Amino acid sequence: MNTATHPSTRLVRYSALASFCAAAAALLLVMLLHLLPALIAGLLVYAVVDALAPLLERRWPGGWARQLVVGVLAVLVAGLLALAIFGVVAFFRAELGDPDTLFDRMMPVIDRARTQLPAAIVAYLPVSAEDFRYTATQLARAHSAQLQVAGKETVHVFGRILVGLALGALVALTHARPAGDEGPLRRALTTRCEYLARAFHDIVFAQARISGLNTILTAIFLLIVLPLTGVHLPLAKTLIVITFIVGLLPVVGNLISNTLIVIVGLSVSLWVALGALIFLILIHKLEYFLNAEIVGHRIHARAWEILLAMLVMEAAFGLPGVVAAPIYYAYLKSELTAAKLI
Image (tube, rainbow, N blue to C red):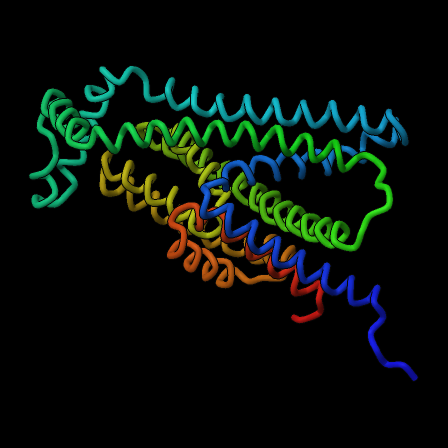
């Protein structure tokens, strides 16, 4: 009996190995070339279209009608996401107001914080709006080069996000077309992309549910519970929006928003900060449970696994690594699970 491996089988194996190498190299280049915003934007458009397209395709099945439906949906989703991004930027600008009056509006918060904080910290706080403005101006002059670089980088990030939205729409439209004869390498690469898109869908949509619930509870606390006790927290609306945005990061996102809320609460009184801390600890415990149930169930990972992946990725790539870690780890788990290695 001839036990030699059939040429077609070897070709499939080599193609699978090449696809794994290509996927690993692509994901690494995304981090090294700072293309993570474009990747996330593209995957978001593709995931939303992929989730909504089957609902519309039931009414317009097959042929050009199916492609038209997916194409219109892809353009619509990309446009709405772009508007959402600009809407968030406009909201923060409107909430923070005119930069010239920002220092005047911040002084009451600093004055209240002066009565709550230790003397060693109070010594570094500005004593007036003019002092605050002068200190900020001096810092801006001292770091003007860094600010210019940051401004250019922000423009580049927005440009990459818009390109990613367009690419996601195009890929979703291409995916809707009937596939012809495919070679083994193309099939293997398609499988890698499908696993990545599925991992992104599982992480982002599950975390969005958790962040949404966390934001609702935080909004109830900041806009209803505290005002009923006679406490009106500064920048409450901004804190709510930040809670949802950073809440899209598993585990650490909740810690970031909690820290900001407690700091602002401390500017009102120590008791408000303590009450906010207790309430937010309860929310954090709830989010930890939901994270284990929703995200962990989707990708078969515990919260500590995701946190460890975020720690390693942060050490390697900084803040972008924290954002990418849950997606990359979910993709790795899906590949290992499909290969029956875990």
